[in-house]
Image (cartoon, rainbow, N blue to C red; front, side):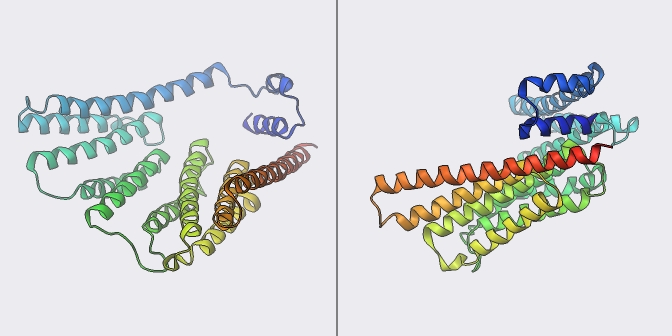
Length: 331
């Protein structure tokens, strides 16, 4: 059903199927989700929100009653909540939604326990150490469970610890030709995107895995594009490899999402990044040549032209993909 549904949606996106006929086509091919599938989807959504609300309730309970609880009561309640979150794993495995929710809740409560230790004993450690130790402690669970949500949680913790570490250690720049601090975030997140692809390529393809890969990759593209825009605005020699790295990253992006597996969403993101970078470069180059009104008008025309050309290119790719899919499915 999922293959038929995706093919019909591709036809609608490419214009081969009229929009008012989409619902009828999905119904005729039995591609509409059934009541049981809708129930499974909504039950999982409710489960996710329940886990998030319960963990938030534990944290806010301590925050509100901090002065009224003794040290032993705080640790007893926190450790009790942590143990209770792991109890479902005695009955269900990590492949079931309940087991994954329990593992995610336990990973969140590890951070709450670490924060409780830090606030109770006032060890004087920097804040980034909390998030770094939190990330290190849940890493075995992340590798064991192979849950996209846990991978994203681990990456968020590493990014937060990196931000706080750079601030706490008073690091203002790195080494040429990568002196901007943003290079550390690009290295972390691009490496995470590569590891994500390598570790999940043999797993069954799911939407959650796909969207997790997209989120990490898009964040890496955002970082390198911001670095490139900053470079063309200053042309600093200490970051002389910014544009070549951006070009190499874009070439790899085209290989992954155009040649290896077509992904119009990711290609659209790359096109938008390229247009924004081009406009920033031209705006910096024309700033002393044309008056502001003329420069803005010229840039507006260029944005319109480049966006139209990109839309035509993406539409052709969608049409070719739909034709290829229909030819493979036809006898």
